[in-house]
Length: 382
Image (cartoon, rainbow, N blue to C red):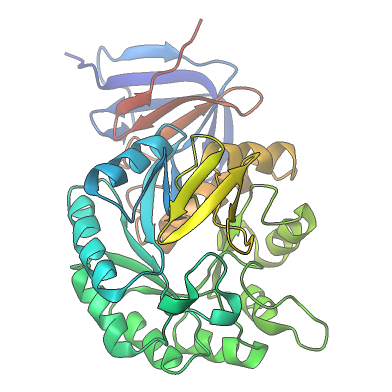
């Protein structure tokens, strides 16, 4: 006999790894996608809609008025906010702070990872360049001493997924090697490195560009800098913030055409205001003013993360940037899932994987979200 979690969604454009299937169907049995519909499963007609995999965000600082630098309840508020916008797999990002506070936060977030609420922890700072600090407190920055990097990894109890470093700083290359040895992603970001220095970091094991183009030297024909090195190397996945603020559409197109969707991971880099509204917020120890959806530091005016949610990034990708739906799915789901080593569970609509999916209407507006077989946002269908 079918349970409430045995469902067949029919009639949608279903985006699979092999392409889009018109008038397709997705069967759900318990927490997983099933190859065939369970006997007696409830049929839900979603004709005229798109079914895509749940979104995977590898760089997210918060949302719903709360951040991953706060309490466990703050973290859960941020998680729920982004789930309601289609992000079914999320890595919690910290910001630069005192080392003892980051160690304590790593312990708190690792518990949420152990409970399955998040997919791991990303440490953005304090091992970044004061020349490219963005919305990080300069007085708290430090060189990437491998011993201190190891301290954060240990505090995360196996749940550290990524560390962003300015690899040109003293200890940077050794820290990249340390991270690679421990199975943690070394990401080049908030960096003032040149082209050759970035190539050295990639050869040492760095595999991600933290929000490519932002917080790094611009591409120059005589001094190509980190952007050229990160784009040209097939070993590197490049993060892009597709909110219309951080990147000109031509820069996004450049990255896609050069790296391809298999190497692009759309991220939110979201802060507290994501999913809420304008006002004043805190990003770590720094005050942020959000006006018309754009977050900037009160002091200095630097862009301070984003108010982006992944459903908006998807909609913009296909309606404004004119990416194919399949490429947008790759950048929002398949590529980041593979980066995290989770592609056996999430990132595509295939039998045996978690029943994580997003329902979009014909205009690519979010209409439903399912995570592990349960509706987070139940579709309101005629």
